[in-house]
Image (tube, rainbow, N blue to C red; front, side):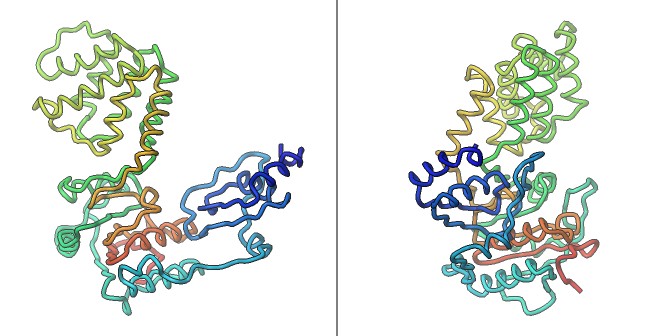
Length: 390
């Protein structure tokens, strides 16, 4: 529209003569074209961005605008400044800040970070092989984890960062579930649940399937044999069989969906499981990994529709500006924008950080979260090719 009708862009430029673009490395072609249309009409742009923090995939549209060209943009700029002073570490460890900035330059230029020698005292390297069996999970071999535990115990403020969601879930039992997950500001599993409830509204089997998917994504212990299969079968049959003991309690959950095959029934199931976890031994094995997301799903039933509920819950979360606990496990994506005194990145293996552009950015973002101490946990088997370890 702005291309076809330049006077609209001109009006916007007069109303907003200065446009500040923050985190512009995450802009897609359309967003960049929008601000450039204002610039063409006289608005002054102030762009804050770091291409080495581009960790989110950019959505492209068929026939859409070309992606942002950093080289062309900086070449055309009237003024271009780089942040080369480690301000974040002024109140922390300046040697750590300088080392991280040097590592950032190395990664940006396509090199490998040498962790064999010359490290500041605030950077620790631990070699710990993986004892987990599932793909993307990581549990350090018991014989290798002593320095990790010592680092954790001596940290009053700590972020444990991993690239993949599956890895963060697997790290919870590594620390005996004492350290919670930082759920960030995005609720992807709750959004998936709401989408499924919207499509399956009135269809009891579809609603049951959506509920099971959400519970299994946000908890551990709600397995197919003891809970999920029985729950879905009872919903499908209309809860007409005579059940006893634990299966009768699962049947009671299914009745909530049969009675209300919509977001209200789904929310009641989630809320009831939250109660049973603390009051009934048959449900004690269910452990919450995404505590806040789980309880937000239980609130959906208080709204007219699931979509309205998601919108209001998200709006409240945005304005309440939640902060992570003193110690937390997080994906690197969710930790972007945060900083912490002490950071552990684990595992620094080839699955988490292969040699490609986005992995270089992710490693850079992860390292720069630390203000005082940084630990890299590297398996001897299949270490990240972005690090020189031997």
